[in-house]
Image 1 (cartoon, one colour):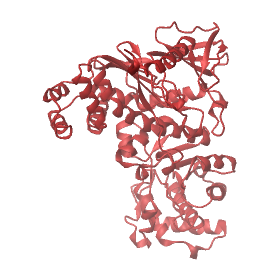
Image 2 (tube, helix red, strand yellow):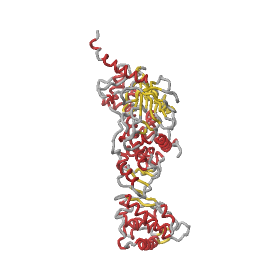
Image 3 (tube, one colour):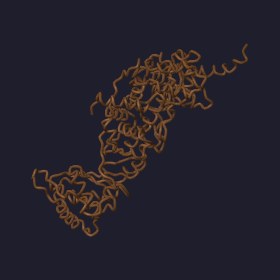
Image 4 (cartoon, helix red, strand yellow):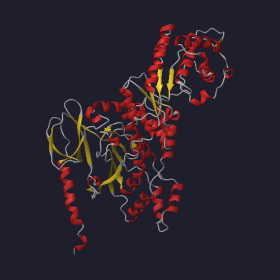
Length: 553
C-alpha cells in the first residue's frame, strides 16, 4: 500500500488540529508556563523525555505508536484568539495581560523532537521521545503528547499480542468501534490495531483516512427483520455468463434446498423461512460478496439456508464468500460447518465450496484466541471488538513525561519510591544485538558519550538489578532514536499505516521468542552506561546536601 497522498495527509492534519488543539491539556501546564514567564525563565533551553515504567499486559515488550500524530500536532501547534480569550477567563485575575500576548505568538519553531521510529518494539524505562526547546513551550506540550502516545502504543501492543496468540495464518478483523471509548478512541483503535497486526477493520472512516482494508456484511437484525419469502424483492438474478434473461432466484434456491436437505438428512419443515428470505435478499443485492451470519436461530438451520443460496449462486457463475459464526462453541461449530461444505463440494461437484471461509466472532479475548489455537477448528478469520479496543487486561500504558535537563544541566526526580525516580541528562539510546540477530539489551548513555561498537566489550548497569555492573559484547549496535521534527517542520517522512505495520512485523520478528511469550516472558535488559550510572549516583548523594541550605550562613 502506498504512502498517504497529499490530500489524505491534509485531511489527517486537519483532523489533528480538531482533535488535539493546544487547549487539550491540563490547566497546570498554563499556570507553570505563566510562572516561568513571570520569572523570565520561559526561554531557557530544556529537555523532557517520554517513557513508560512497566511493559503492558504482564508481557515482555510494547510497541511504540502515536509518533505520526505527535509530529502533526507539533507542526500545527499555535493558539487562536479564541483560545487566548478563554484562558483569560480561567486563569487567576492577577495574571499579567502580557502573558496572553506571549501565548498568542507561541509555536513549535524552537522545538526539536528525537524519537524511536513508530512501530518499533520497545521496553520499559527506555526514553522513547526526547522533546527539547524553550522551557515554557515544551512544558505546555506534555499532556497532549502523552495523550497521543499512551493509548496508541497500548492498543497497538494489545493487537500484536492478539496476532501472536492467533498465529500468522489466521486473518484478524478489528470490529470494536461500537465498544470503543468514544469516536476518537474508536478511530485511534482501528488505526493502531491494524499497525499492530490486524488485517481488516469494520470502521469505514478508518479505511478512508488510513487506507486500511474494510470488511463487513450483515448483523442479526438484518436476518430477523425478514419473516417470509414474499419480502424478497427483486426475486430474480442475472447469470454471470451474460444471459440477459433473469433467473427466478427463489425457485432456483428452493430446488437446491431440497437437494441439500436430502443430502444431509435434514427436515425441510424446520427451515426458517425468514432467514432464507434474508439470505436470498442479500445474495441478490451482493451476489459476489455473500457472507451471512448463520446463527440467528441455529447454526444447523442457518448452514442449510446458506448452502442452498450459495449453490444457487454457483450455478449462476457467482462465488459465495463464506459464513460468520457469532455464538456458542465456535470451534465445534466451525468443524460441523466445514464438514457440510465438503459434503456439498463432493456430492454436487462444486469446487467453490472448498474455498468458503468461516468467520468467528464471539467476545474474543486474548485468552480465548490462544485457546482457539489449541483446539481443532476451521475458522479462517476472527473478529475481535471489546477486549481489543478497550484493552480490558490493562486500561493504560502509564507513559510519563519528565524533565531531564535545563540550561544544559541535568535534572533528576528523586523519589522515596525508587520506581518513580528519573534518570537525568540528555541521552542517546542504543539497541545491542547478539550474533543470532536478536536484540538482547538497550543501553542508555549520556549524549556526549561515544557510541558502543560492535565486537567491543563494554560495562553497564542493568536497571532493576543489585547495582552491579556487567560486561557484554554486542555483535551489532543500532542507534534507536532519530530526529523527526525541528524548526517547526517534520524532518522524517510520515509513513502510512501499512508501512508502519510492516515495521512492526519486522521488529517483532527480530525479538527472541523468550521475550515474545504471552505468559511469563523473560525480562529484557535495559541498562545505563557507566558514566550515566555515575551521574545518577552523584546526584543522589548530592541531594541530601541540598536539604541543608536553610542551615547555611
